[in-house]
Length: 351
Image 1 (cartoon, helix red, strand yellow):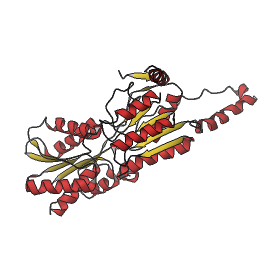
Image 2 (image 1 turned 90 degrees about the vertical axis):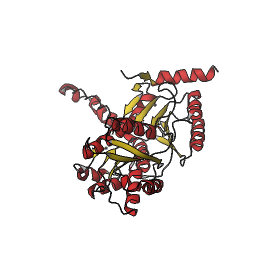
Image 3 (image 1 turned 60 degrees about the vertical axis):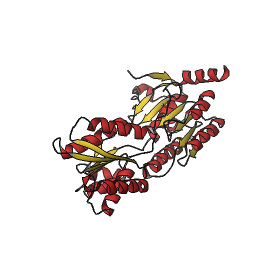
Image 4 (image 1 turned 180 degrees about the vertical axis):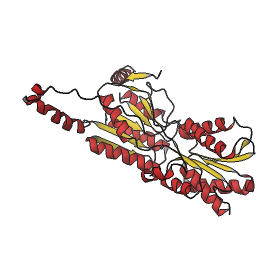
């Protein structure tokens, strides 16, 4: 059973501690309104539902929420930030926004500055799994609940932070491994290259673990090289170019921890005169439009959707937190494999 916590109670406990020395998320549908009897509908009170509807549209008015973004270096991050900013504006929520520019120390400093502004809730997309403790401690001391978005950090949900909202990164890695098994089968020997994401991030840790543990079930698959791609296309391209120089035509498949890594690998393969999708299978994670175009062109076998559209869900959660309602400490943002069978249907929504 998932652990639950009453947000209002957690905040009270935090305040006490200060004085005494964590291809979208499922959102609960509102309960259906009870029908109003005909005789009551004629009374003046019948106008109330219209007022309630207007009030609902501005449910977040007066609420102050902060969002600490780790960086804005790719389409996924841009889409995530845009989703949160758009939803805040729609609901009349005052949003405090910071961008750490890929610097963990700056993100800690950003959150400490945010704490001084006393928002109702802090949302944070942590750059690394380790290193965010000072930021969480500052928020806890001030009694401000923290929601972790899309990446986890060291700590205990319900104690060091309130909840985590994001994808199942381990499952995403598993799905990429399964896609390669689907293509190659379990008989012929397959040499795989892995281009990883930011070292130390929960995303890279879990996507690597899920992929490697799933692939280990099959004796014919071998991971012959693993290099860091930093979730960045240019860095991934350089890493893949180095691997190609060392391994040449031994490479049968590439797994990128995100689509930026996968596309960077594709560019390196092309530069080396190899044919991605034909000579070498390529899989990634994200659901980027560029990756979908690669799938349509036959250069990529598939990408697992990791939805960046957090806005509606996280602000639903913020409203519950401020109202003192309970929420799960782990809210999964489900995805699915995008490949040649469904890419045309998905691509209009790609980012």
